[in-house]
Length: 226
Image 1 (cartoon, one colour):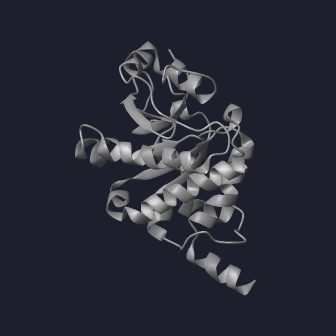
Image 2: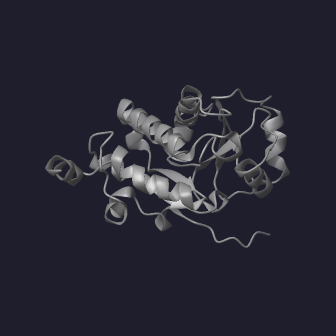
């Protein structure tokens, strides 16, 4: 039995609550939205401890478990996860598929296959497809409106897949922000979108970039004055 301490949404502050602890951006990549900044969080730690609706797994095309976060998630979820993954017959790079989470404290795992090397279009597709799969799952509005309102992304395609961590974070934040802006009705139904980091360098990158993609109104005044 796992002795890991579970982490609930109450343990994870929103971006709106963290602005003063993050570096001030020197440039902005989006317009301010107080509502959106209440739906975004950064959390640094073990994604398998999150007691939320769904976590994202950076999988390989077989979906049968690999290295890094993929191995960690499969190990924590148990053999039932790989058994269900076998029924999905793999997943193309840039696509995503959903399974139950089994022994994980979350309800679902959304598996996405990131590109090897820096291929921004495919990486963008990963983040977009995760959000689409949550919305378009077979149980439709039940999953979207009840079961996948709290979603955590891991860092996709970094590490052994070779994507520069900072460039990958830019793609992740740009894609999620664009999706939110283009799908306001669906976004308003979501409780939280969490960017989960495990390495300190990824945490530092996201702390620096989040206020640029999800700025608060006062950032506009600061940058204008400069």
